[in-house]
Length: 207
Image (cartoon, rainbow, N blue to C red; front, top):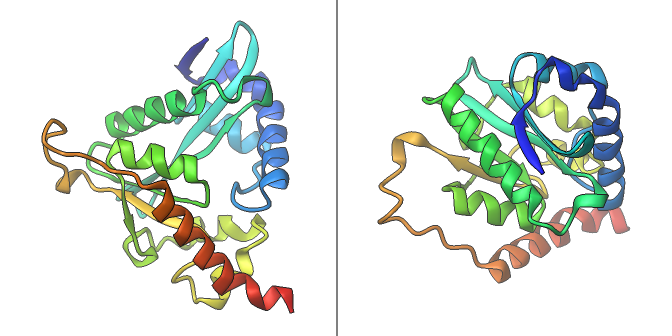
């Protein structure tokens, strides 16, 4: 298995990447905005993506998006093909794309919005902290990308202040020596938070 910075030569995988992202979104029922192959190819050609390959088989993918004139960047579209799940690959991809983001955009804040407990754990280990949506980018192009999520109406009802997703942020100006910093992750706390959000925002839909 190799995880590399994607380039134009990897454009042949764009279709399977989009299909895998779409299928995962249907299974989860939330998150993961739908993308088109041309968009994915653009990320590859600009050196803003990483891809995992087992020989010539697609295994996983993630890309970088810059917002607010580069003040913020997000690692988006993290996906692992079903044939390669439960092997720790997502964590490896997440680490590579995070380090690549820090290299390309050293002064940018790296943020994430997610409903996935596994992603929350990976983010915590990398130094992300939970934050309110007001601390994330106000670039409306980013938030428009949420329109393909089934819970977009929640974001609209709350005037973009909160949703089922949890906002997380890595701020390079607030980091301390990793040797003296411990990033704790409590699954019970995150699960409770997720359940509270679902009960608050989805109860109207049940009526």
